[in-house]
Length: 160
Length: 36
Image (cartoon, rainbow over all chains, first blue to last red):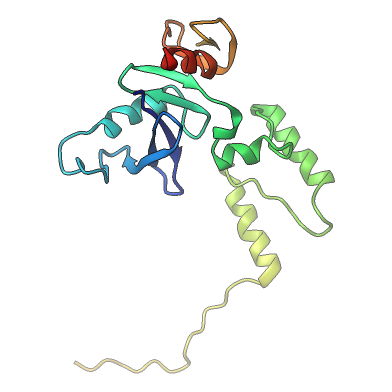
């Protein structure tokens, strides 16, 4: 009997779902494993378990959330069909995904979105750019106004 | 890293693997091995 595992990222950074499948690709079990060395499997209180051993393999092979499965006992990898791709990856392959771009190409791609695809009056701000925090502040200030401090006219004096 | 190919049938697979990887199989070959 061969057992395959896959690994999907959770919403919380550093947490992964490692799922075990049987011969017919039915889910046998699924446990939350973290890169900090925690696992909620029955061997969680022990120093290690197979889930904690296989998580670095999934990460180093970049097979988190894709259709690749690990045959842990054999130590090999199996590529399944696209139906086993995680939801995030499925969304990314439905034709509305962002292509894999870097550097200038990516900036140009985003600029294209800003020019063509956004409704009138909607501004796109790229959050992973260090000096864009100012743009976010300004956009919020433009939309709702600057915050005003409410200072009481009379501040009672402390006696002591 | 190199293009992943099935180590049994040589079929190109999606993604890349380390240059010395010899532990990758496609689902078809996996099923054949598993069935035998």
